[in-house]
Length: 366
Ligand code: HEM
Image 1 (spheres, helix red, strand yellow):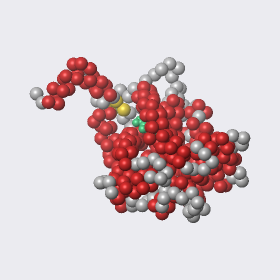
Image 2 (cartoon, rainbow, N blue to C red; image 1 turned 45 degrees about the horizontal axis):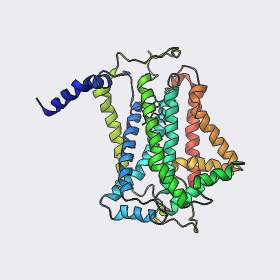
Image 3 (cartoon, rainbow, N blue to C red; image 1 turned 180 degrees about the vertical axis):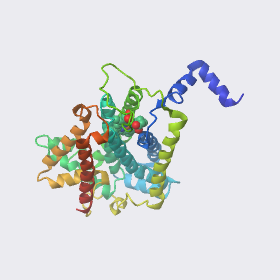
Image 4 (cartoon, rainbow, N blue to C red; image 1 turned 30 degrees about the vertical axis):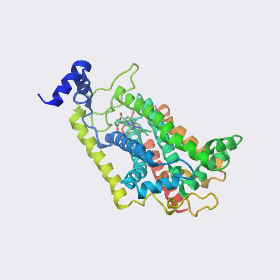
């Protein structure tokens, strides 16, 4: 008897693990017409695992003080063996994750899988998206470069425009009137400890919801019909479906490989893509570099603030848009999920994507 089998028997006798594995792998059936968009959750899971691993390695040499942070990153890039690889994978990985997050969200919107009874899955997912943006924002400051310093100054300054409490909020975020050591301290604490802890909890809630409710059947094909949401708890079964393992795991693996290839392609062939010149200079509070722009996924927000005559109005419009998106499953209550039967939703959907792209391009060139 092989060693693997012996270990398996040992664990099975004590914990019954074969039953758990079978229930969640070979006997876990997914809809027959499931498509590649459903692999994005697994892609995100993998990319975040990579982010955690490279983040922990970066912590070995990173020093979170205003005097040392920039130099410690330079040391990681130039002296620590493979430090450049770990750091570049972490920085580029953040961008690829946001891309995958947006694609995952757009796919569940298009297929209407945010609808009842999956409202809580959506809410947990949306909070994960906001938290991921928070992790990007706090991580951006850590290298303490000119880019970090001025991008954070711009990003936090709009909060000062909120009537009455603006100044208090601004000082709370920065830990003082200006971006400085206290800002670096709190952003570091949030980036490496505070946010990841909440993030881990939310991922567990999100995956629990997905597994407990059951994967939704894609709303395509002649046999799909809208059904009223159940009045008592109901796990969506797919008795004629395909097993998660090995069938869907193979599909998950293919998309994961694609995203990892994309990540490595940027790391090896365009390593400077997300590093503008200001990211190679140490932070200098007395010299504002020209043309500081936020990262591509914050450009829409940056441009919206510039369009409105006062920043508070811009912030309010952004806040309302985000709250509407968060509450979407509670507002959109029809059980119809087929895109062809939801012309109004699909029009708003494509208009929203076009607006996001247009604002981002405008923000980039403005
Ligand atoms: C860290 C980020 C996230 C991870 C690791 C994650 C993971 C997953 C996984 C593994 C699934 C099941 C397979 C699939 O449909 O892809 C899933 C489903 C789902 N996710 Fe996420 N997700 C994340 C973020 C989000 C976000 C930002 C949203 C929306 C705002 C969202 C909404 C949903 C919904 C509604 C489903 C149910 C899909 C269905 O049953 O058809 N997720 N997620």
